[in-house]
Length: 75
Image (cartoon, rainbow, N blue to C red; front, side, top):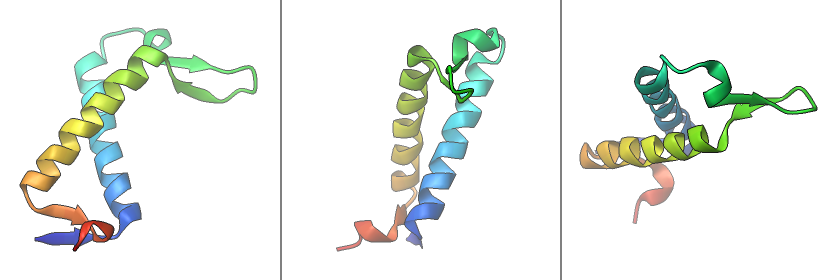
């Protein structure tokens, strides 16, 4: 079992999920995936955020299947 710090775990699964989002939707125009707020902040559109969340779930399932967990999940 690989046990990693929570901040590393979150960084790992979010980077992998973002790679999946870009790889599976990279041919779409940026305005379908990203939107700029009035403040200038850039964020995912609602549809892209849903896809990203789904990819996060998939990545976390793969990590768990391979016994990679963050330390707070230990009994």
